[in-house]
Amino acid sequence: MNRPACLIFNPVAGQGNSEQDLATIKSILEPTFDLDIQYTTPEVSAGELAVQAVKNNVEMIIASGGDGTVSAVAEALINTDIPLGAIARGTANAFANALDIPDTIEAACQVIVDGATKKVDAAYCNDKPMILLAGIGFEAETVEDADREAKDRLGMLAYVLSGLKQLREFEKFTTIIETDDKVIEVDANAVTVANAAPPTSVLAQGTAGVVYDDGLLDVTIITAKTRVEAIAISYHLLQTASNNEAAERNDVGYLRTKWVKVTTNPPQKVVLDGELIGFTPIEVKCIPQGLTVFTPVDQVRQLQESLDHLPGIKITAKQHVAEAEKLESIKSMAEDGVQIDSEEFLKGEG
Image 1 (cartoon, rainbow, N blue to C red):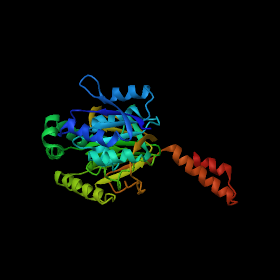
Image 2 (cartoon, rainbow, N blue to C red):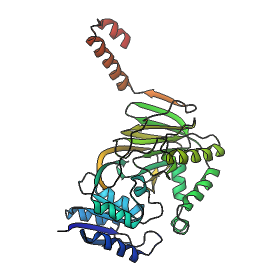
Image 3 (tube, helix red, strand yellow):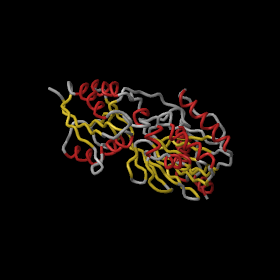
Image 4 (cartoon, rainbow, N blue to C red):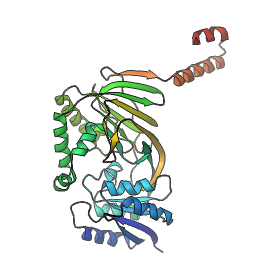
């Protein structure tokens, strides 16, 4: 007996023939699944269709469209056990590429038919669901400038051309990055907080591949002094991401954390999963294993942090962390039989 599945299909996604795309999807999936096909319209979004499908207790949801469609469906499935199948038909297909889901219809359908699922992380940014990333500064300006008409006509080239335009106008801003254990103060051009990101999301690639199932957010900080340096950074990050290596430049820093708050002066535009949502500050919290996805991928763990080399950076350990480290030290001393003078210890605390 075939499994029931809700297919949310965006007929205006991408540049192909949507009728032919749907016919291909049905030819591959219908031998295995009983498809309930729901179409997005200008009046009814993919997110609304997904929310209703969840209320109807569907067994699984398949999203076919661009990143907006797939992310909207994924957001409705956070903290449910309903698996998501992604059939990418958009411009960037960042979600599929981030999880190494094939970006051809036939191969993506086969991943779903094969039936292997994986728990991956999700996140909330200023209480809004986040599947991919939040970009501050250069990233946000680039996305805003790459309008819908340009994306339809030029595809990924629209983002590249917009990025080159933004480089001519690039500027630094004072940034305070707060995590559970430290406060970082630095002048930056861009800060990207990523839950998942493909190699083409260049400004998220400080770490050696954004790990989407480790319960941590990947934060990349760019501190270029000149436009030439900014171009060199972009090229370097593209190269290291392609080779699954961490960035090795003095003007790129990165860390991994469960929670982060980013404040800037002056306030900077913020793009969340490809859509502008306003201005800094932002607060992002990881939701470990918050989403179930059909995917063939496993990833290798990488180095979590590299910050000290950034010019002018100031890192302050939070008090409770310093206290925890001190208590751990006292515990170790006690276990080793070292006598601890409580009066001397209290003097030291004062």
